[in-house]
Length: 140
Image 1 (tube, rainbow, N blue to C red):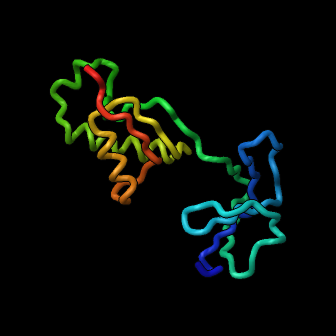
Image 2: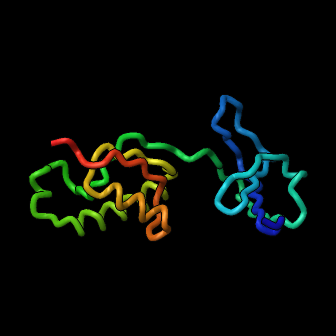
């Protein structure tokens, strides 16, 4: 990719996910959808698009290793008896969008009817959501 495909996130406080303290004056260099480098703001390549974060905090994506993408709206499992699979999938799609907005970039689904399809929909870009690691259906 050409250098104009680079975006530099500047002006933020960076937590890199290690034990290192928060850093200021660090640019997060992004190419496409991937973080390419952390570097001092003075070393941003010419032509990179700069986005000033105005003191916001950047941190690595969060991972939730125990979700059930069922589209369930109550802890009463009996209430799901008459809710169709389509409505459950629509609800679960909305749930994935909310998870992503909350900073969760990967989820492991611990058993649902819809997780395999939701994973495919996220991968193909049909719905926004975190990376889905599905376990498949429950063993009944």
